Image (tube, rainbow, N blue to C red; front, side, top):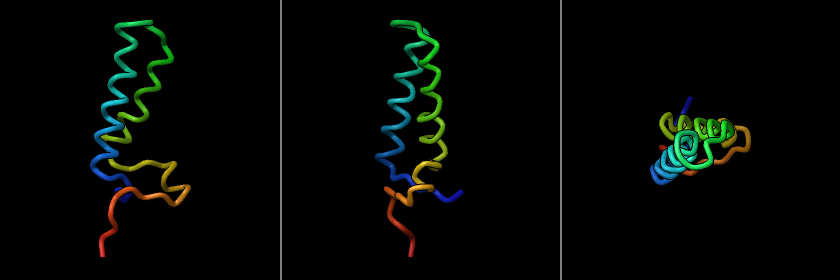
Length: 63
């Protein structure tokens, strides 16, 4: 799996994913907040399957 996310994209995904997961423990305590795992994992790994399907890359390509 090649990396297709830039550093700013990865930081944003980890931050948003962590914030959404925190809603499980504080706030409305809804089980829907577990969907925050998706942006968290894609941010940590650096690969987004949706970007791959759509042909989008936010990182610079290596030449």
